[in-house]
Amino acid sequence: MSTLEKLQFDDLLTQLAEQGASDLYLSVGSPPMFKIANQLVSATEEVLTAVKIEELIFPLLTPEQKEQLSKEKALIFGYTFANGLRFKINLFYQKGNLAAELRFVPPVAKSIKDLGLPKQIEKIAELEKGLVIITGPFNAGKTTTLAAIIEHINTTKQLRIVTLEQPIEFIFTNKQSIVQQREVGKDTPSFEEGLKDCLEASLDVVVVSQIEEKQTVEKILELAEQGRLVLAATGANSALEAILKLLSFFDEDERKRIQDVLSQVLEAVVYQKLVVNRNGEFVVVPEILLQTEAVTLSIRDNKLNQINNILRTSVRQGMISFEQSLANLVKQGEITQEEALKHVDDKEGFKRMINW
Image 1 (tube, rainbow, N blue to C red):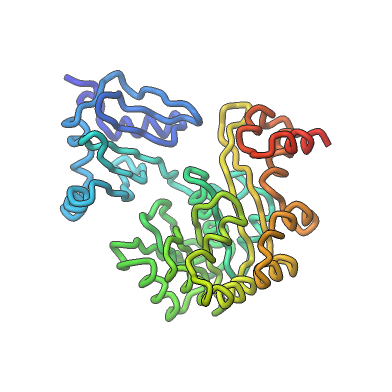
Image 2: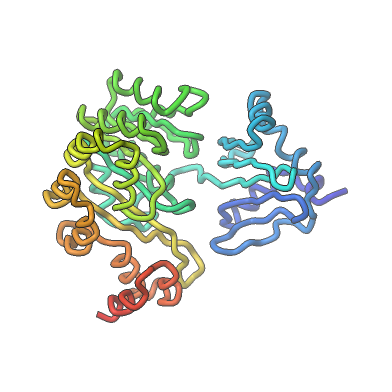
C-alpha cells in the first residue's frame, strides 16, 4: 500500500501548513514536494503516478470543472478541504499527464504590520477614494498585501466592500464592514460585467484581482472618478511599468483622455517583490509611489520618464524606490548584500547606495 493511501491527503496538507510551506507540487515521476521558503522538500518518499494524481485531484472537481479541464487542459480554482485548510489550486498537463500546484491560503489575512509592510500601506488603506494599484512579478505576495488592506478596512470602517476575484483566495468574515466576494466565472461572467454591476451599486470599495483587459481599465477608472476606492492588482516589474501597462491597452487617440483621468484618480502604486532574508524566510521589499503634483503632471503631460526620479527624490513625501528599500534592509542586516544584488540591474550603483 502506498504512502499516500496510508496518509490521507488532508493530513498531507495539514503537514504543509504546520511546516510553514507555501506550496505542494504534484508531478508524475516525482514525490509530492513542499516549497518551504526557497527550498523544495519531499513530502513523502512515494513517486507519483498519473493514476495517483488523478485519484487525489479529480474528487475535488465539479462536473463543470472536469469538463473545463478536459477542454482547456488547465484550471485554476480555490478549494477548502475537510480539515478547513484552503488552497489556490492550479491544474495543468505536462508530457500528457496531469500536474498540480496547491498554494496554501492562510485562514486569516495577516495584518499590514504582521507582513512587515511600511506605515505608508496603512495610510493607503485609510484612503476614501481613488485608485490604488498593487503590482509585482508572479509569486510576489500581491494577493496577500491586498488582503491585508481589505482586512484593515474591514476591521476599522463601516463600508461595503465588493471584490471581483479569479479565483477567490482569502475568505473574509464581516467585521465592521460588509465584504461581498464575487468569483469571475461563477458569480459574474467576467471582470467587465462585474465592474458594470459595481458602477450601478451602492458601495464604497471595489477590489479587482487582476487587470488584463482594456474594458477593466476603463471601468476601474470610471469607478474611481465616481469617488469610490478601487484596489487593483496586476503584474508588472515596477511602479512605472504598472502605469505603462494600464496605458498600453489604449491606442494613441484614446491615450490622452485616459492619462488625464489616471493622473487625477491615481492615489498610489505599490510594487513589491519577495526576497530571502538571512534566516531563509521571505520578506517583502516594496516600492511606493504616492500621488503628488509632480506625479500628476508626469502622467497628464506624458512625461512618465520622470517617475523613477520622483520616486528616488520624494522620501519626505513617503515614497521609496525598490532599490532604496532593498538597500535599507541590507544596512539593517536583514538581507545579505549577495542576495540583494540578485534583484538589481545596476549592481555597482547599488553597492554605492549601501555604502553611503
